[in-house]
Length: 72
Image (tube, rainbow, N blue to C red):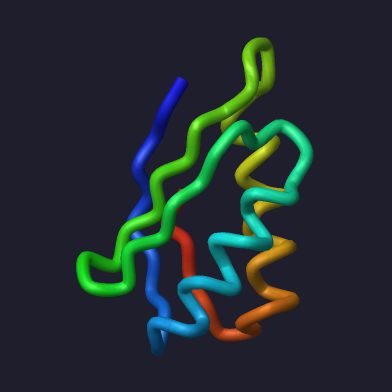
């Protein structure tokens, strides 16, 4: 299952770091962050609950960019 989320990220480098953090999160099969469109596309592993996984993704991204916002 793929879902798109609106994000607020300040620079392209931060977007790359957030993408890497999201990919390493348990339950995420793939993740892409587009700085230009301010969107994050996350593909979840089968059987994983997107809302629960996205809370972990948000925590991981906040470690990289403390003021990032992901609209869940």
